[in-house]
Image (cartoon, rainbow, N blue to C red; front, side, top):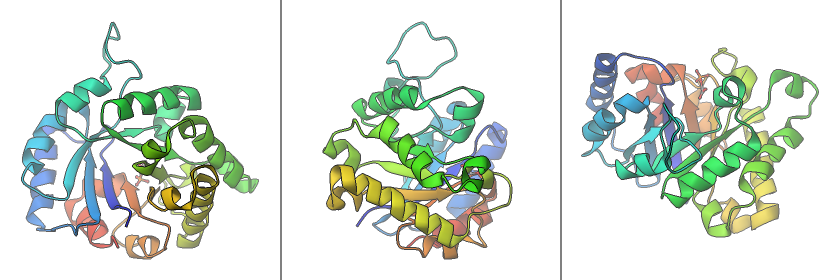
Length: 253
Ligand code: PGA
C-alpha cells in the first residue's frame, strides 16, 4: 500500500524556541503512526538538525527540507544543496511549492533538475503542483497540472517514479481558508494518477502518494483523507498548531 502522509510545511515561520516547543508538543500528543503512515515536518533550514535530533527516536516521523538547489555544490552563496541535506541524514525535500514558483521564478525545467539532484542523493521529493484561480475558473486545471507533472517528472525512470510523493495544492486554496472540496481534490488526484498510469502503468501509479494541500485543518482532514486517491496532506497554517496538526495526523487512512 502506498504511504499515507501528513506533512507539515512551516514555511518561514516560528523562532527557534517556538519550533522546539511545537515539536515537543507534537511528540507529547503520543501518536504512533501505523506502518503505512508517515509524518513529515518541513522546517526552515536552520532548524533541520534540531528537528532531526528531536524526532530521532520517533518511528514514522521524518524531517524534510523546504527546498534545495539544483547544483551539487559551488559558488551559490546562500543556497543549500541536496548532498548537504543527505549528509545530515535527511530523506525528504519539498520541491516546486507554488510560493517558490511565484516568488523565486522556479519553472518546470528548473524543477526537473532539482528533482534529479534530490533523487540522485537519495532524497524523496515532495513535488508540488497546482493551478491558479484563473485556470480553475476557466475549468482548465486538469491539463494545467498534468503539464506540470509531464514537464518536471516524466523524464524519470519507472523506479524513480515509484517512490515519488506529489502534493496537489490549488493555489487559490493555499492560506486562504478556502479549501478545495473533498470531491474536487479526489477528482484531481484520480486524474493525476491516471496521467501517471498512462506513462508508467497502473501499478506504479498506484504506488505514488498524492497529498492534498490548501487550507487543510483538523476539522476537514477526515473528509479529505477519506477519499480513495487522497493520500494525506501538505499542511501550512494548521501545522503550526500541535493540537490541530495532531488531529490531521490522526485523520490519515
Ligand atoms: P495552508 O498552506 O495549509 O496554509 O493553506 C499549504 C501549503 O502551502 O503547503
